[in-house]
Image (cartoon, rainbow over all chains, first blue to last red; front, top):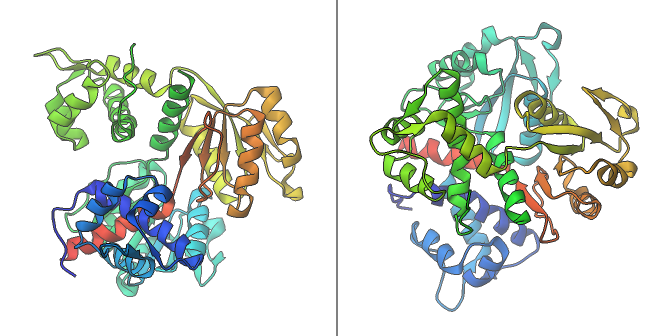
Length: 211
Length: 211
């Protein structure tokens, strides 16, 4: 499928959300849905939904609506979820453990190939098919295994060093939980998770409701 | 300060990011900054920044730029970060522990008043000034302590029940990590954290770079 290079970041941000709702519909056995019904479900306007999906050539048929299965699959394709990514977890404290468990349970396209931590006492601890290894072997592991993504759960003061290591060893994406803005080569994608941004937006909406 | 009720969700989402960068500038002792320099730093256009901040009456002076401290403080006020929120963590598995540690370390406006989990073996485990309590005492605790926010880290199948409990007991905000869309009274704000959305956006950007 042709992909328009000009698709805005805002649209890309909405696609995973579409896919989540479509997945729920699939599980319930729903076969087709109109942009209007999708609108009620997701909370975007029907016109927004049509406009978003038209970015990718549109998938709906006039008077029929969208095929839930097709749309789910196509959005998955657009997002690059038609393949498996090898990932490493770097930093296996509470957050690293939580993310490993989350990914293993919910993300079948993301396979945890290795886990890395500096802490001596947790070396060789097992998690499913992976074991915790020392950070000294991180670069070699990434090269040998052809790891695609590093999930960074290390302390902020280690963030850039780890980023340099994993990018240098060939990962193409970093899922960054360190709250540090990383300097990276142009061919490495990064997705920063700032927990605080979400908590602060909640505070805003709470006071907005009080007024 | 007067607040325009029509401020878009997109602007609200950007405010915590502004505040983060301003906080970094404050720490470095920077006193003022132009929208152009702020633009280079944050990655939004200077015109976007001026437009965003004009929603709140604007804080800049022509030819001077923004006072970093004022702007940091004003954005904090807008977000409702000029007060302390009492929070409870509900669900103290790996994610709940990670979030408790994160909040305690990074969020001085959010005070962990209590932690709740069904698991018998972790009852009375201490975390700073809080101890893990049984979920049976959750509603009473919220009422007695005047808890503002529940951080929900419970399994999805428990999500709505916990939401009903905490909303019924009087919390005004829910930070929801359960990936379940909660049905809530209109006066309770909710902020859903969908880890997958962020990971799937990363996958998109990775394949976008390959093309």
